Length: 358
Image 1 (cartoon, one colour):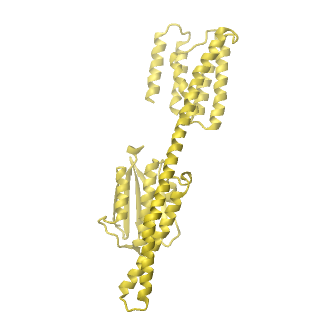
Image 2: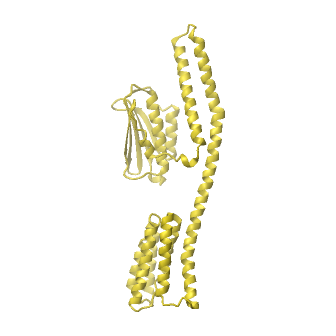
Image 3: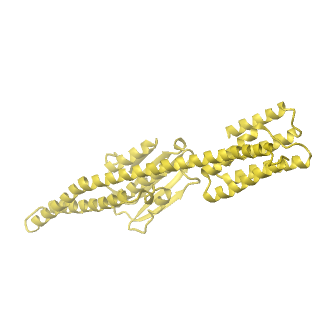
């Protein structure tokens, strides 16, 4: 927007200083209208190209009908940002249609100039027009390809890192977890026919159950890590809504966001919500419902997870799960607090600033 304002000011100054303009006011007005469309060149590149081309061609037609030489301001060269944006951010369909519009506009401009296209002057005009417009198009296309190439390189690196991480998990952590499961099963069989304290039996059962759960989670995680990167996009707000379940305990998810949040914030909220729901299911004794709410405030997004059970979690925040959630939030300048809810049960509240990460 600042660039557009500066260009409009320059166009007005150019109009005031030039004495060769037959319609100075109309020329400045058309140039201002065309420049005013540039802020939307990324979000609506085809519309901006069509608008600027129509304004330029329409003004040239008006000049020809008025019997004055065609021409415009030097500031009009800034409109080359429109074809650049079209071939930088536009879809395939938009680029095809926009290319046809640019070609038609160029031919119209050459035809209205009154120059014979088969003379040296006409050929020079064609070459100049194609050079300017085609150059902007070429730069936009090359930039698009460069960004896509870098994205492919990053995806390949990420895939290699994910594969290496999967191997490390499988060869180290999974191996030790398997040993725990086997030892717990052997110990459980050994104490079956021997007098043993109930606490020992219960402890062995818990060890076996939790270790088996770790193994299942590890296998699932290794499978995800070894999958193609493009098939595992970063989770966000939509995935938080997928946590809703009939239970038990029942999980109710409410999302009230007036606008989209940055991807990194959405992913962080998803991870915190995932950990909080898992903790509630494991530790909230007698819980019948878990409520997840995602809301917004000026400059921040809030996540609240509450349950109606009797939680054994410590409000001091010494657990690894709570510490991990706090660290995730702290990376973005946010906070995580957990403790007894006012109406009973347990409540976790995360606040992530959004203004500083856009």
